[in-house]
Length: 157
Image (cartoon, rainbow, N blue to C red; front, side, top):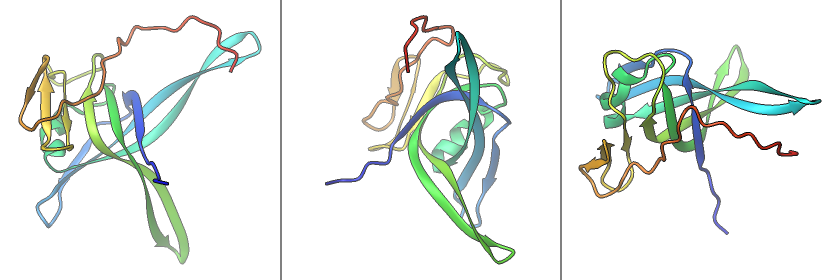
């Protein structure tokens, strides 16, 4: 039996991305997103925000960091990673999402006109924008879901 570690989220950035180059020359971009969850309490639906830390590496970090600004809606595909360290003699850990594919979606505050597109680190790596794929042999893969789409059905769970 094979294990599976895959996460897909759509949310909004809670802060501008932090971009840096490591001494090895590899680029890394750290940011957080908020994902709203609707839950029914009594007869009313209420929104509950969940927050996730994202790490984006390499060419993706170079290409997308300037578009990853607070309020921007993004689609994330990736895997969960557990960072472990010691602080004051105590073992600490934190789960982060290591992004494999980032899709820029509509909405939010952007610097200038940010292109709608994705960058995937999958086979060959491909950047897609405006329905066209550049480089590599795979599409970004994330589906655009209109930000104004509302589910009106009362689902009992």
